[in-house]
Length: 371
Image (cartoon, rainbow, N blue to C red; front, side, top):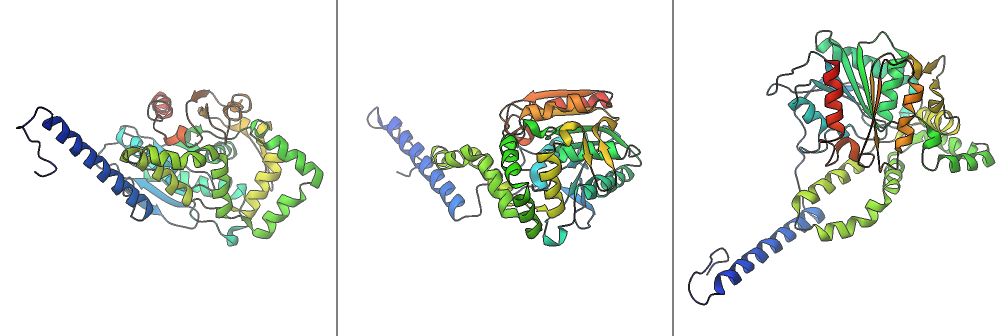
């Protein structure tokens, strides 16, 4: 008798026993296949990015339009997805069921993405100015032009949310309709470990970190990957047990694999940007005071004149929800600032299993109100 055949004759226990054998055989086969895929194969699940078209391809400013040919855009506005530095732009499109980009297409939006690409030693002189007064304004204008002059809704994750807000504050003439920040760090006094870092910097005059960054030309990709893993150390420690407990659960392993792939693709920070992040944000807490000192001007969050949605995560240890909530105080010039707290980690609030019912639902409501 073959493994897939259930014998109906003989003793009463034959059917049940054969069924259990078949089930066990399937389980062992699935476990073996998943173990091979994780260890030696091409992976649990093939990469399946949301279809898109590259509109503009220049260093650190690649502009991508997600295809909407099968889903008619119900809104005249455009959505520009703004990633942070030191994180791959795939944060908005991890996998089919965890893709904000795909969700926006399916719900009648016209999403675009700006991608900064790799950061190298040659980019060491790039700072906040390059993003706030050049890269993001250019992307916004190109997106608007591609939609026939339509207004643009910015959605930024992590530092991308901060950069979006600073861009809106520094360039009020841009066709920005709204800004959404998912987990943006808006007060470094509320960031985990920053007070301790300041105490050490006081002893050295801040010399050590800034000098190392200057010599290295920035923070290289391996260090950003290590820092992200350390921030999620509980996940790293639990990973072997998670794999063992889910070796037959292909869906759960695929989710884990997408996070691993995301971490492996993390780029670095350019030198000037790193030093500004260290000096202006961590030590001086410019953003917590509602501003950022640039080369020739001061950008103030109070100059944001469009509606803002802020999303904080209950279990976000990279940007605690209190650091996001600070925007209620500093974005005093905005006609409305909506603050929502959702379940999830730093990446989880953007694209985790619960994001569709939490963050994405809040975003949907916020954008619909702008329509």
